Length: 81
Image (cartoon, rainbow, N blue to C red; front, side, top):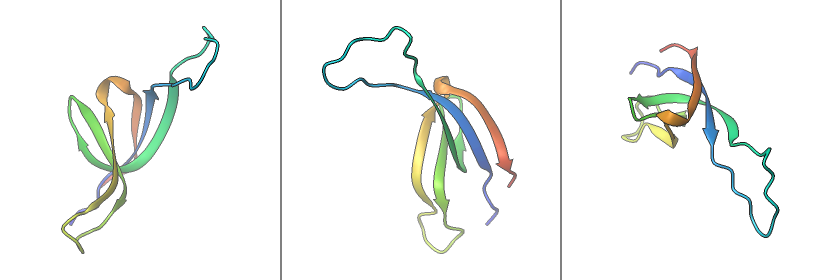
């Protein structure tokens, strides 16, 4: 089995304010960075996994994160396949 690409994805996420609070107009959406094995990529989303099994099981991916395409700020390959 070929090794999957490893990618770093910078993306915007929702921010929630819990409990009673005052709204701060300077608050912005959270900008996150996630690094993982590239599971899938299409017009809708990028899916990355934290772990990859290279053939010992029938379930090769662990801890998949699906990031909506609209939320992605930047994506770069850390390691090619």
